[in-house]
Image 1 (tube, rainbow, N blue to C red):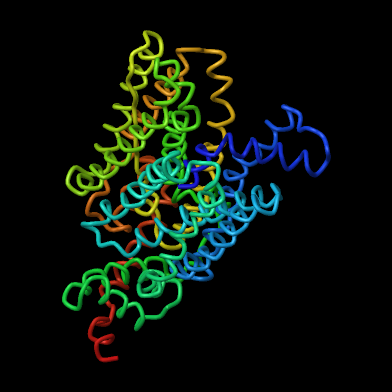
Image 2 (image 1 turned 135 degrees about the horizontal axis):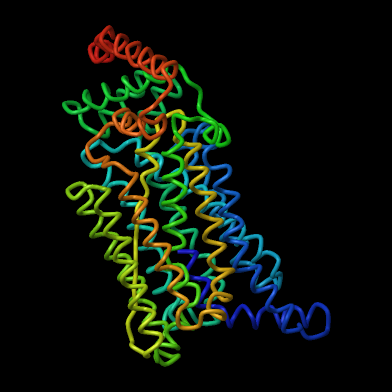
Length: 463
């Protein structure tokens, strides 16, 4: 939502900066300084998102997944207040601080929310529920585009209300989220609270269906054998998650550098080059947001049937195709647009001890790539002109090839089963005998403990 609403009041913010500077320093704001201040207001959101990604995983470990999300809403409300009062008070510094804080809120949310959803979802619905993140991200972009139309809140009078409207989702979450249980995996594996875990599973899955999920969590708990949550830098030295980490980095960069963010950042230039009149561009931009939202919804309905692997490969191949189409469109003035969406497997590729750290790394890469796209695309346009999307064509092709060659299918598999799938990639077929024997002993040890577990379900029901 905050990615798209900043585009509508661009001219109003420019006028506000000029008037504030003139009244404060009794001289006009130079064009270069105006451009600099506007760039800071627009890009400080990405800087805040990067900071939010750094602390999101730690908050999820210390406060819990639900607790971190609830605390994050306070940041959003404070940011909305600062952005809303910046115009009547004549303090554009409050707008910069507010944009930075709402970026922190977004960085934490994108880190913790998929973590919570991925841990509470049953195996057969995990893909569809994880796609909910993409569905509502694209829905937020589309909503921001609609709200920002001049017929609604895009006029100069309503500019403060538009920028402060991001507090409404925060208030909604503060109202509804307390009624939901904490992540059962967090309760049992991280906190060792078996009774609360059983209650949470009954709430999520029902009294008759929760036992299967409980057994899955128990197996992961004993396989970890008391392992503490890892730090992000520890994942880079852990050979057991090497290819999982490479996969997250490649897919996160691939998603952000696929070209869709360039469409949102520089829609005016692209549609002008395609021959669309300036007054119609805001409405055509709605088409890109609606297309992406519809695609995310379609993927959410298909992912647990088609599987993750083929859906992601197909998505990148389609983005490759549409990069070619866009190149011809800009060259021959055809009025076509594109939209692409991909999903992340971070929740499935890592076990409980390394999952928050993986989300922190993925979030950091995502925000850096997000910022890089915004900074470099103008130079790419200046250098390649109508062929600027050939860069995204190459990137999408390489990511599709990587997914085809590396990533196994994860549909309907437990986290431990997915971990075993990556064992050969991480240690190789010609693993040294010592490493192989050690791994086999650990596997036998885990199996022994699983076979000799007490009847946990009976114990929890007795409690």
